[in-house]
Image (cartoon, rainbow, N blue to C red; front, side, top):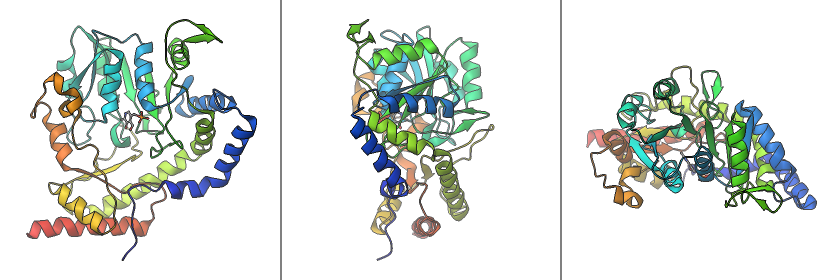
Length: 374
Ligand SMILES: Cc1ncc(COP(=O)(O)O)c(C=O)c1O
């Protein structure tokens, strides 16, 4: 039996930094500095510097980052936020949790990101913001999104939960809009050892509001300006994120190396390859996503060979049961719907070796050509 190729391998990454991580665990434990401790403050400074923003606020998840960022902007009941139908549910559910309504826009068929050509038609008098999601690590077409937003005097929000370190022109994703939301879910390009997230922003007031909202609305100890939540980043997670942040750029380079090898080995195979980043942007390949009309069969054949894969995402947001009350049926957002039935994410992580990439590409080619001959 040939070697298994997992979809992601968090153990390989841990092995490469285990001594530093164990020392960080020991330090936070012996200092008993668990809640909003020195590591949280240091990580916030270091992550803001990395993202080239003035502020970062550590939170418990990417979902909280999106929701609290929007609440701090004053988004709430009666408002609408434009967002892609093709994304992870949290892009939309965070809008819903503020009391506002997600207004979906279809994806660009090549990039999977929000199609800027369709944004304008979705703007109404209730629109309060446009949310761009840098899906799979490929920056959305921010020039076009910003141009439309400016024309309509609307703020832009970035769901950067899949694009840690990606650049759009000379700016990091997350630093371009009013705020950027990051998830540090373990398998992200920058992943914690549990749930974690952050917002980055240049708006001091917005950062301060989110800082209070994550901590029971406290301005000072036991002085609560308003009712709010506990959405804090743990010190242990912050300590680990500080270690991993130092490796993020080199890990993103390794991801790009894996992607270009896949590109080379799968060229002409009949599958649709990921669109390289354009407009001066840089893809960080959180996911390497191909398209094939035989997706489920190809995935099954890869699994039989011990090759992991994923589907991001099998059901577009407007067709999720959770949003059934919105009444959108099939055909509402055809590009996102077609992608949902065709996309397949191949193994992708910085430590993935060349032999494994070759094995995956060979298996994909064999599976696709078998179906062409059938
Ligand atoms: C695009 C996108 N938005 C939001 C989130 C939510 O992040 P979290 O799982 O940390 O709440 C994710 C996480 O998977 C995501 O991929």
